[in-house]
Image 1 (tube, rainbow, N blue to C red):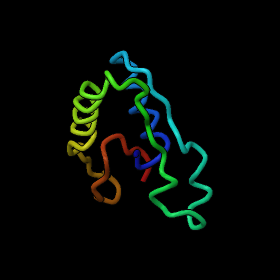
Image 2: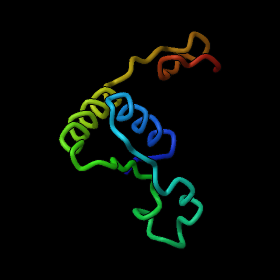
Image 3: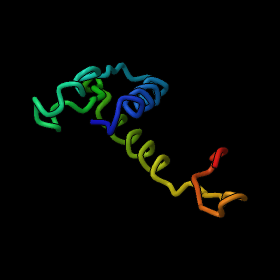
Image 4: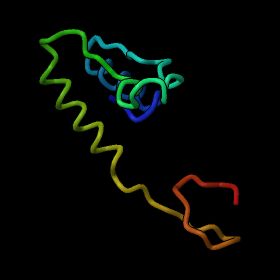
Length: 90
């Protein structure tokens, strides 16, 4: 399960780069949030071959660790507020 559709596609591409066949499911299900339980509408990335299970788990752990690292922040020269790296407009 991914937190959102862009994250699902990033993970999908990461797994595909490691040679695994996979697909995104529930791609358009977020519109049903409220009508269906929230946990049922999140996008999911499915690895299609059982033989890829262990490689997929290792790859996902590496992917999550990389994307959970604290990103450097920068201070706005105008208002002095701290913002994520790459922030350009105050």
